[in-house]
Image (cartoon, rainbow over all chains, first blue to last red):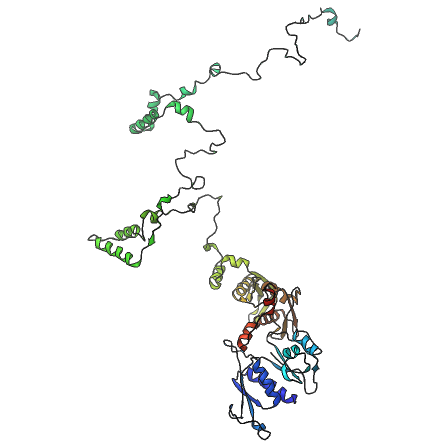
Length: 157
Length: 392
């Protein structure tokens, strides 16, 4: 699990949103895919497709040999009238040099808006924290509900 | 014997006392009147005074001399009318009915009750029999028909007067004429304007400040609404413009306006006179008022950031009863906007002008959960409202 590439993804999503792009693409990794799937489930993304650097739709299966030429195409969302992006900020919580693990209790405190260690709670409307657990990547609210601990990945506002 | 007793007493005979009378001896223990009872006040009869003749004799007909005197002032026709009037009234009536009433129900003022006074008297209303339940407004066809009839009946050389008469006499309704011309109303008739310096009428719009009138036209507020809007001067200082003529001083004001219930505006004014600058800033603040989103009418939604110049600040939502714990400028803004729970932190500069602007910017930047949910395509339920029936 490379947090370096994940932080690249975070910066890229933020930059693309600020540039008001409709679609953008990221390298295919298992972590990227699961995080983007959760972003889509939370309603941040309009579409998520598998493709190549040239086309957003390429149904060829991912294999070890072609994974470097696979891309995840991401459709970004904007507010109707003001054209403001839905994703205003995507920031890493765990860093490659400092990973932050937490138990289910800590997740619960964060969900309720409190701070836990050096991690700030969810205090903005619509704010999401994504965590990596042994049951896969999930939203922190789901992890707290299922009483699962894990590593805090990134924060999306 | 006492030496001081006068000699006279010695020389004089003793004064004879009244002999006790058997007749006056009472048969009861209470003291009796020594003399005959007399009324406390004496009755005086009119005849005894001998001064003025009886009242009835005061109302006698005019003598010849008086008539001659009247003839100097009145024409013969008027004299005749006066005499006729004299004859018409019986002096007996004058005596017994022509006097002012002194009883509690008498009028406290002089009035012959010949006219109806709008304030004192019971208003005269149109009779209820004027009401017509079938009254209705004429439709366009009927109005056009009336006009056509009038045009047909016009004389050979119509004048403007004809048209004015038509406009005055035409009916706008179908039904009883009385119901249109003299409708009955439960409302009291309007009082006429009384020309009395003691009575002060409400001023018309004309007398109001022209700048306020303009503000009302621009914002759509009434003068009643404007009175409820509060303003507060937050920043005031002189500013100087350096020209080749020298320094030109003027005054800068920064004012906020709000209604204490979710409206807030910021306005700046600059003028040579501080009073002018203040007024300018206040009017601009009222004009710039915008709705501020408030959670439960007490705090803001989430954490919002604002940045103007070197001022960077963050406004944070807080639970009920927390209060507004922040610097004075943001506190005043919250007070006028009706926010009661809030915390704020200014991380860099604390310039008052930019602080106010940044806080205003931050307050406007809030996103509602409903808006976010709609944009993300998610269903949102406010649990507090669901569980406590919206009472919390």
